[in-house]
Image (cartoon, rainbow, N blue to C red; front, side):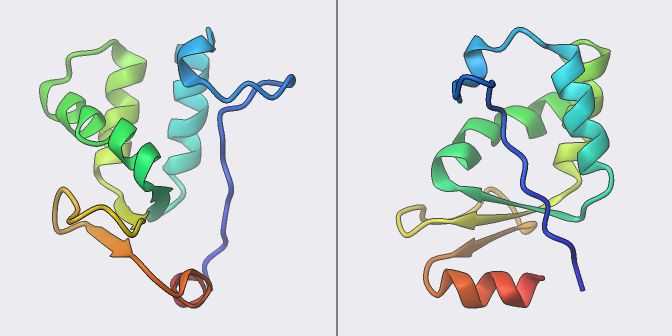
Amino acid sequence: MRKIIYGINISLDGCCDHAKFGGGDDIQDYFRRLLENVDLIIYGRKTYELMVPFWPEVAQTQSLNESGNAFAKVFSDLKLVIVSKTIVNGNDEQTTIIRDNLKDEIIKLK
């Protein structure tokens, strides 16, 4: 049975805007190490649209610094699950969309 790990970029004062964090390489390295131990990620539509196609493109072009490129490589190798009623399709065959019965679908994934 899979373990579910919850991860979010949030400051101690409750700020959830990734553009306002200054950690840079430290945050990317932390999440890269975390993602190295998982086989899929579950995102809502908005987070998915922030991450894809940006990180898969970086994985192909290796256009960032060492930390960013390493994160991109790990990210692009993972299966993605999107929870959304509005998104039409995923970016590739590694992407699955959950539209209904969220609880049941997550239990199946676990």
